[in-house]
Amino acid sequence: MKKVLFTVALMFGAFVASAQVSVVKEAKGMMKKDPAAAAKLIEGALTNPETANDPNTWQMAGDIQKAMYDEENMKMYLPGGQADMPKMYNSLVKMFEYYMKCDEVEQAGVANGTVKKAKLRKKNAETLLKVRSNLANGGVEAFNVNNYEEAQKYFGLFVDVVDAPMFAEQAAALKADTLNSLYANYAAMAAGLRDPKDVESVIRYGNIGKESESEGWRSLMFMAEVYGNKETGDSIKWLETIKEGAQRFPEQD
Image 1: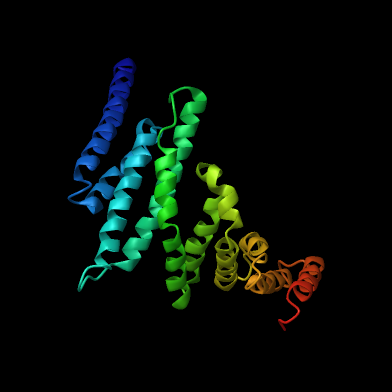
Image 2: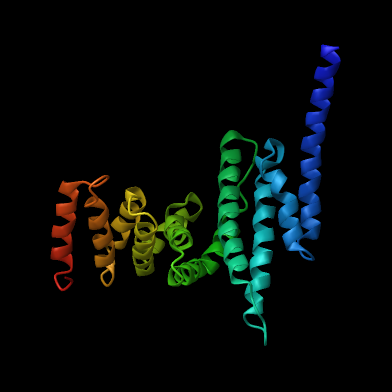
């Protein structure tokens, strides 16, 4: 009896994996006519080992989010169009997450020999860089309504992608772009306003943001505040930050 049950269990596992492969194909067919339904359909394939280790699964998930993003973005340019901005920005974030995961899985496949050649990185990197500025727009909108958690997510992702492996060829140019340090300021500020005890996030983005010639004082100010926290701060680093701020931005009180 145990042997029979074990065999049935193996068959059931194979059936589930096969079903998820079928789901990916079905989601691809639905993407153009109903991308929201396709996005819901493919969710299971992102966690099933059989399909989650296939870069094409993540590619399809990213393509679906791109279709949802494009659909809402297009409404902004149509007469009388009314875009669902939260939906658009949510799809934008997921597009980044899925395409970067696709790259991670594909590169791992190349390393272990299951994938002959990486083919998806260049196209996906170009796609994401074209829409990266809208992450900052999402951050601004969230910041203006005091939604600091969302603001940190958007500004933080704008900054974080610079270090993502899939942007290795563009990393030098991206880091040299003054917008990177500018928006790092706002990521640091959003983190500090969201949770004054989130030292890690404030310092992480603050160390990038402080390099901004125009806005770097904001990062140093928030860094000084978290270092000055009686419970989680560091008095030595607090004093160092105050001194650095005074030297870099003497015009700021």
